Length: 318
Image 1 (cartoon, rainbow, N blue to C red):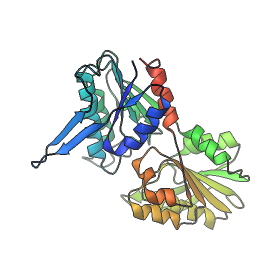
Image 2 (cartoon, rainbow, N blue to C red):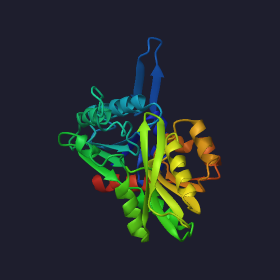
Image 3 (cartoon, rainbow, N blue to C red):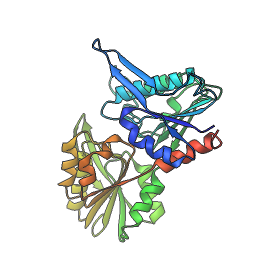
Image 4 (cartoon, rainbow, N blue to C red):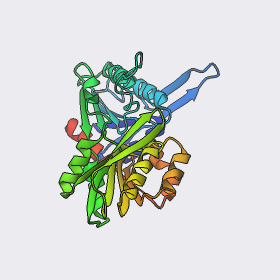
């Protein structure tokens, strides 16, 4: 039987892409209503009560600006799918919301990433274990926040980002980071392209950041910054300015998640000295009209990676 795909409202664009890449998959709409009293109504638009019986179901839901709402939708749709007899429910979550809240620094801080992972771990399952497909997590330990016998896999956008970057045909490169927090990724790109590395030392207090020092000699180099996500774009731009001040010729950026906070962040990047940003379509803000009109932003599609993983996981169409 062919797999059935549902999605949160904010991730329908990605669900449609995944559907087109899985043979015989069917994207089924979800009806949503809000009653005057505030209650939310959901209905999976199947024709019969047994339409999901024994089927592989895929629920697509990225975090967005309404991360709580997205998590709630994922939980409700997945729970309903299991209740109606799905054989396995797989959760495609290209951008894991709250991934930056992965640890407590100050007394009393809530480690929301772990709480959300525990909630997802305890969703009802069908005959087979639930599976969570994630991508380029802010912290590599997040998959271990999931509990019980659910499956959880982290996918990587690096092949897609690298292919897009190589089409630019640049040379005299140096890979760098926007801070000291992504050394393993910068090292991976530097090793792939046989370049040296650079980093910036910064300090952050909520939304405010300050660059203190550049580590590495960037003089006369084209610097390529990797960061897992872009939100306000301030950190990325500050780092780019620091590298240019230290003698870099140009600055490009690779990022897995174009998770812009708002339109101002998109405009801020557009007006920055960064030559180009190559990102993916994991986050709903990647679909914003200003992003698609941007002369500096290239959005690459990673839906094939999720479609391949889901197909392999489920042994093809059932």
